[in-house]
Image 1: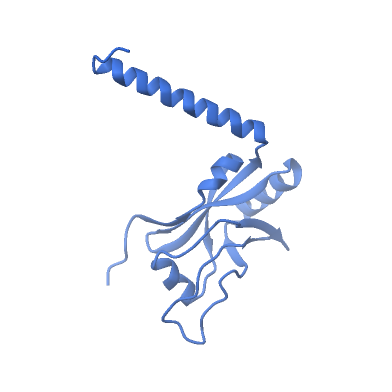
Image 2: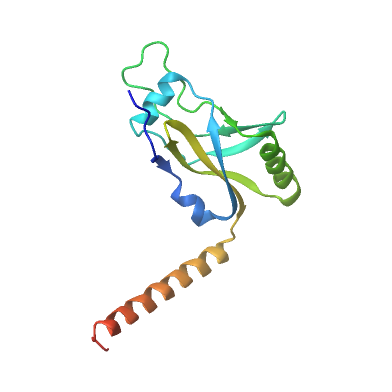
Length: 159
């Protein structure tokens, strides 16, 4: 059977971009069991409360929910287990250094298959305050209004 090509998104964390200011992103592999991969291929995963954390010089993903595989037997996995992230040593050291010095957090943005391999997009993020969120919403509304008015003008429908 030929290996699949391209990128197939399984789950995305939409709330992360609302709650955090994204500074940098990294692509990481995950150490998964067979039933976890099968459940991901079925498109079942949730990143709602997920975060990455350093322990003993390695990075781990906590709180990601991959439901049990329906056709699995006693070999099924635990849905919210801690999963090891697979990155190059330089990237791990860089991420650990930035989280320790700058008060930044590591948040997963997406889980996807890239050329058949399960990957997670990890973001180095800084938490937003409530007034930052309000400013972002106001800016988005203003941009939407400008686009709407300019679109109407382009069609010859002046207000």
